[in-house]
Length: 432
Image 1 (cartoon, one colour):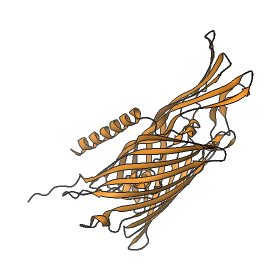
Image 2 (image 1 turned 120 degrees about the horizontal axis):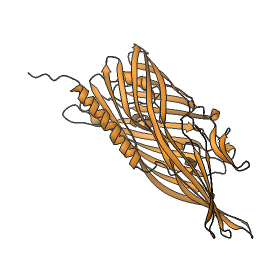
Image 3 (image 1 turned 120 degrees about the vertical axis):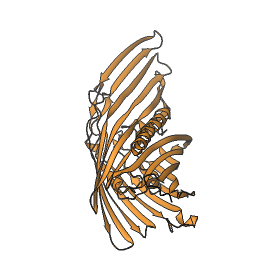
Image 4 (image 1 turned 180 degrees about the horizontal axis):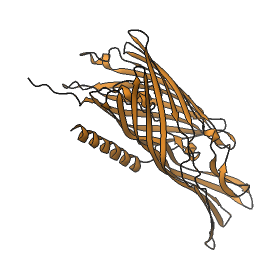
């Protein structure tokens, strides 16, 4: 029965999440998603999202924390944890004196966690990796001969990962773990240039399709400081490697008067790559009531060459200096007066706060892209019934400010909703 249950849950997690990811629209409407592999997604789950996206040092038997797979070893032996989340976002774009509002929504993740044997927890699910979605145009006047030129930019796509991971409590204070994921997705970007006095139009289309893997390793060291205080230290490493994808660039020059067209195609073999990444984090828990956490991560994008078209050489090739190392710092707090109180509901409610700051991983016209500042606040609302239900409805609000000098400023207000099912499935009933 247990094997059937686990198999059914695995199939349901992957099929439902994959369907939602493939059928949903892009989770972003940002023009900055035209750079690199797109806007990198928040890969934390419900609890971490309310705490500024922290997770490397978070550890608990009733939550799924994919940011550090070593945390899986802490899963309750009698529990099956399933967590799914979605988000809705309102974004204000500002450039000069112009302001534009846009809305988007996305299915974010579906993950499950269970114990297969003593000291060994396993997690499966689907997570986001990046999003691409934008459409805008710019116009400029050149001279009396050419007139005005209009450039139209459009892009869509993104990448997702279906993973399986395990965490093992090697010795009492030390746990190690891994996440092995199948990474898939594509992007389709294009720019079309037209002039109101010219008979020619020029368009460039950039495409790539990815089907590869990602590997993340993690460890956690948990130490009791006193009867009421616990400190957890964590570290992660993400393996950088080539993705086996062949990005292409199609250049189409059309004479709109004669309908004669000229097409040039460039292909770069194995032209996309992931960087190595590193992370450290810690959390401190007091009386199982208050948790404070902090993370620092770095992705070494600066060592990765990226495909781009060079207007000077008229070639599409890998170029260095287009990407830069990305550093993210986050802090968060979780408080519940008495999370195990038998009758007082309000004492079981979790209050969460967090903040994060991240540097860009791409450059725009040789300059650093926009930096990102995020503030979060959230609630964890227990769902109670007569069977001692430990499931939780997690709701968090997030404000994200993205800006750089002389570039578009984005202010996004995002609502994240996650439902964590945490049921006692693997204990034996006793009948008198």
